[in-house]
Image (cartoon, rainbow, N blue to C red; front, side, top):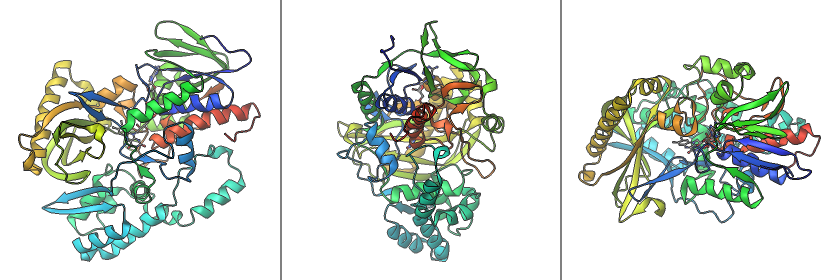
Length: 499
Ligand SMILES: Cc1cc2nc3c(=O)[nH]c(=O)nc-3n(C[C@H](O)[C@H](O)[C@H](O)COP(=O)(O)OP(=O)(O)OC[C@H]3O[C@@H](n4cnc5c(N)ncnc54)[C@H](O)[C@@H]3O)c2cc1C
C-alpha cells in the first residue's frame, strides 16, 4: 500500500464496473490506483456463479454500447470489456409475449415487427406504426460517454442537437407517460401485455422505446462468455496497467480532515491514505455509513424519501437446467395463475433461455431463469422475515414458479432441475445494494432524473462514481462514471480531460 514516488494516489472504494473503470482511467492518466473491494472477486453486480456445474449469469441481458463507432463502445474497449473481436450472442429479437394462445415478438428487424403486430391486431395499425416510428427516432438516443455533461461546451450541445433532431418528439409524447397508460392505447390485450412485460409498468414509456431501439440498431449485444468474464477482462486490463486491487477488504469509513478526505478506514481498522478518494459504491451506503449524512445532495435525499416517485427495483430469481432442445424464443413472457411474491401479486412471468452461449450448457441441458420484479415494499417484506421464514418462503416459491413454468410449457414436466434461487436480500448482502436494487432510481412520470455532478459540497478531493450518479443506472452509467470521476480530477488539476 506504499505510494509510488511522484505519483498521486487515488483510492477507489468498490471493484464493480464503475470502480474498475475509474482505476483503469486513473492509471492511463498517470495516477497510482488502489481498489478496495469487500468481495473475493471483481464485478459487483456484473457477475455470475456456478451451481451443480452450470453457470448462472447475474447481469447482462443487454449491454448498451456494443455498436462500433459509438462513444460508449470506445469506453468499453478502453477498459478491456469489449474488443473488435468480441463475439455476441446470435439473438434476433428483444423478447416475445404470449397471451391466450397468441404470440407477439419484438424483432430486432423493425419492419418485421410492424408487419407481424399489424397482422395480429389490424385495428391497432395506426398505433403500431406510431410505435415503430418512435422506436426508429429513439435510435438517436445514444449514451454520451466522451465527458461529463457539465464539462460540455456550446459545440457539444450543437452536435448533440443535430444528431438527436427527432428524439425530442419521443420525449414530448412518451417522456411523462407510464408504460401502463401507454399500453391502454392498444386495443389488443396481447399488445397491451407486450408493452408492459419487459419493464415495470410504472417506468416512463420512453425508456422502453430507447431500450428496444438499442436492441434494434445492434447496440445492445450480449458478449459471449457472460457477465463475470467481462468483469474479469476489466480486472486484467487494470492489473496489466499496474493497478492494485485488494479483495475481501470492506471499507467502513472515509476519513475527513476538515474539507479534505485523507483516506479510508477498513473494517479491520487499517487506515489507507490517498490523495483522492473515489467511492464507487451504492450511494445509500455512502451517505449513511461511509460519510456523514449531511453530505448527501438534496435531490438524492428527496429521492430516498419518496419511493413511490423514485422506486428501486430488484427481483426474486430462480434458475433451472432443462433440455437444450427447449427453445421457445430467448426471452418469453407467459400468463400465469397469480403468485404473491413479497407484497405484490403477479400474473405475468418470463422464462429466459441461455442456450445461446455454450457457457450455460452442460450434458445436453441449458440454464433457464426467471425473474419476478420486486420493489421497495417487497424488499421490506423479505426483510421482515426470520431466517427460517425466509428459507421456507423461498422453498415454497421455487415450487410454485416451477409449476407455473410447466403449466405454460408441459414438455418441461420431469425435465427441470432446480439450480438456485435468490432475492433482493442477496444483492443487499453481496453488494450493499439499497433495497437489493439492480439499477439506480427508476425514472417514473412522478420523478425527475437524478443526476450527481460527482463533487460533494464541503469535500475537496472526493469524486463520486457508480451507477447511482445518474438514474436509471445500469452498466453504461457505471462504466462512464468511472471515466468521468477521473476527468473531474484532471480538470481540477487543470490537465486535459481528453482521455
Ligand atoms: C439481475 C441484474 C440484471 C442486470 N441486467 C443489466 C443489463 O442487462 N444491462 C445493464 O446495463 N445493466 C444491468 N444490470 C445493472 C448492472 O449490473 C449495474 O448497473 C452495474 O453492474 C453497477 O455497477 P457499479 O460499479 O456502479 O455498482 P456495483 O456493481 O454495485 O459495484 C459496487 C462494488 O462495491 C463493493 N462494495 C460495496 N460496499 C463496499 C464496502 N463497504 N467496501 C468495499 N467494497 C464495497 C460491492 O461489493 C461491489 O463490488 C443488472 C443488474 C442485475 C442485478
